[in-house]
Image 1 (cartoon, rainbow, N blue to C red):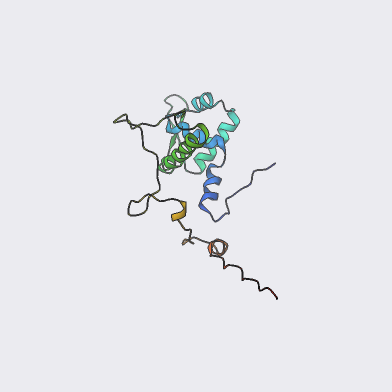
Image 2: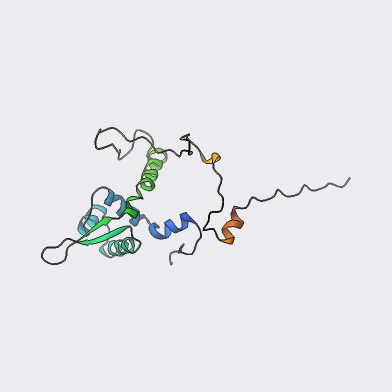
Length: 170
C-alpha cells in the first residue's frame, strides 16, 4: 500500500504533511529539539531501524528542515542540525504535546514538562491571539482565500448559499 502524497495540494496543512507526514519524522524532529544530533543517537533513543532512520533523515535534509554537517576530523562523521525552517517547528510540536497532555494523558500526568531554562518556571500553554492580543478560539476565525489560492481553493472557501426553502402545496 503506497502512501498518499500531498505535494500538489493547495493547502498549508497538506504541504506540511508532505514534509513531515509520518510519526518517525516528527519524533526525529522532537529529539533534535532535545539535543540529539548523531545518527546512532537517534537510532538508540527512538529504537528505529537504520533504513527507516536514514530515509527520514534524508527526507528532512531534502526539505530543508535539517542540515547534514560533516564534523569528522578523521573520516566522515555527520551531525543533523535543525535549520531555521526546522526551528520554526517548535510551536507545532509544542501544540501537539500540549494537546496530548490535555486529551491523552490528562492534566497532572504529563510525561514531559517544558520549563524556561533561565527561570526554571513552567512555560504557559500556547494560545491563539488576535492582532490586539485578545485570546481567540475557532469560532472567532474565518478562512479566506490567500494570494496563493487556486481556483479550487477559492471555490472551497466561498460561502455556500443556503438551499432555497421548498414550497409546500396545499
